[in-house]
Image 1 (cartoon, rainbow, N blue to C red):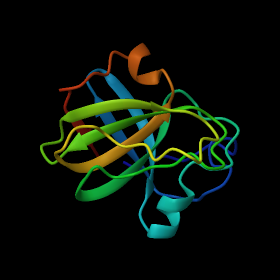
Image 2: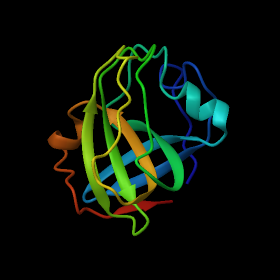
Image 3: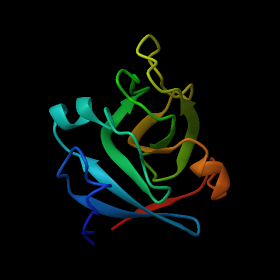
Length: 134
């Protein structure tokens, strides 16, 4: 299902949006498809709604790396395995370009979903949950 973004949500990019269900939570995630879109990610955004995020397809890579250069908001990174189950959740700190964030789990990751920091905890999202993308 494609979702129309509000002007505030779609500040920097005009990316496709998918619906992601995790447990009882519904999130609307922009999809970073190209290498350029993935490098841009959520950089230079001042705000992210609690039901919004970004989905990165990591093609089964082990320990995909993320940096927070020019990212102005703290984020939760949800690492999803090839079985669509959450393998790890980490918090990444804004403007931290010196750290390469990744999961400590040494399994292939299919997706990484970035949400605002704390959104996972507040919505009861946890390791082992299954994600559904439409």
